[in-house]
Length: 195
Image 1 (spheres, rainbow, N blue to C red):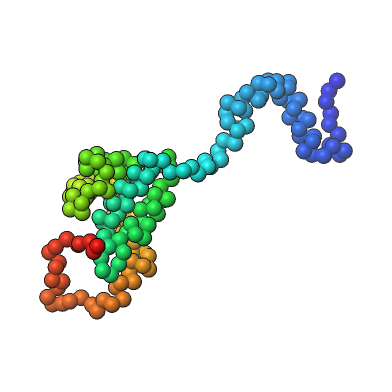
Image 2: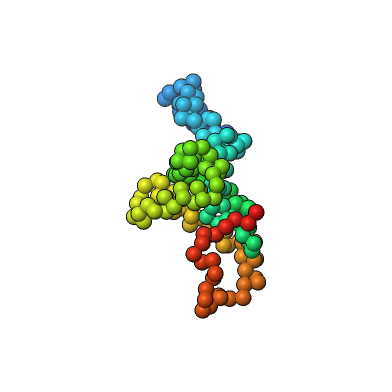
């Protein structure tokens, strides 16, 4: 006997279930269909975004190293906070989801800094951190290595995010203009951190 659904009396969803069920039974059987779905992940919610998880020790180390990098690039002074104080390192991390190429580069770059420091990069003094970052800054501009890309991306992301924040430029309200023709008296010295 051939199956002939009555499309006028059976609701569409139920009709589709009956037709699909018979189709699966005829071709591969329901048990095999369930095995195929389970193996492909379709029956388990594959493709859904992963649930957020608590920060691990390596993520905490990554965050600390990245904060030290952005604080070295833009330290606090008497007019404005450091980039880390504004959470710029967290914005950079949020823009690089776990598993992305950007996050892999961030991880590798921060690991390199920690290795080159002989311990946590964040534990170094300002001069030692600046010296290590200068090594990265000295890489050729056409260098496409992950390390060079890491530094360029972090520096660009830090500057773009920092100077877009009102808190970063609030201290410039008292700026009276360039001290010409003499210039800044400390122009030949690196920026210093105000404690």
